[in-house]
Length: 432
Image (cartoon, rainbow, N blue to C red; front, side, top):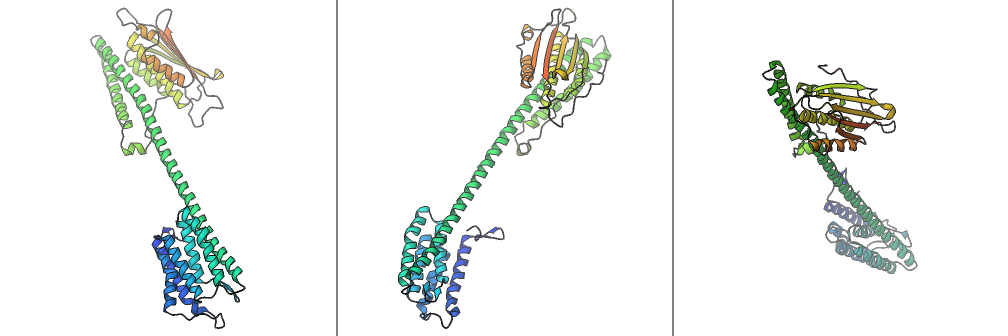
């Protein structure tokens, strides 16, 4: 009943459609005697009983949504009475086949019952009521036309019943499709929320690393400023400025971290709310910041820069950041050589950072745990490098000092992503 129960795209209540059907059929039955030709079959003149039977044949359809089987039985019995009392022409007779409004009312009732009833009631209508109605029509038909009346009634009602079952089946398929679509939409929404939460957790970890490194750098810079305060006031002023800048950057990252960890609806509805991640292009600024803390860094690049995925960019930056921070912590103001070697022919980028160790006696020495690579910083570097398919080697140098050697694979022509900006050559680091 989708087409009947929808008008101009707006759903129409069943009570309205059923009432409209009942009124249309009632009007048709009441007007039928006026439309009969004068030389037609001899029929009984309309009277009060005729009106009652017509109303019983059509008006129960208005309540069909509430009592489908009862309405069908009342309509069928009343239509049979009208036919038996010869108020309407026979379905099949000497003048041919005549499917009047009363038969249409019964067919409509069968259709609605097959559409709205359970499979058991629909089977009962198809196996009992339709055969009984067809046989009754054959009995009431004139002699010589009984078989034609039987077949016509059976075909009419079976067609209405089959159309009703087909409509119900299509409605069930539609409902199942809508339910599956809704379930799929809910599943996709849940997956999207899970992906957003996972991404937010990853970003929070990244920002936690940034904040932790910045705080560590601030501590080292503060110690360095305190040591040179009396000997070099200008240098101490520069270190205090660097501490201020690092502190401001840390506050900014903390705000980003809190923004990422928000659980309000606005944050959930906008998965793209992500802070920008550092790339290799940000290494000169990182080197300048550790130089301001007193670390002597020789920064060089070689080879032709190639495209790198964003994850590899971030990995290189984090490895260099962790290595420089460890050097400041464990070796103090020593000389460090940082080199990036692009080797497209070997499809790799080599990152090497080596320091000379503590520059003088009294400086803190590197703990053995870090020398053996079991510290959390080295574990994090190994995880990052391994995640992009690279390798990491760390250890002490024979002549003193410590080295971090990372190899990052370059994407091949088959795996290179479009739209990534190749790494441009670093400008000459400031201060060198």
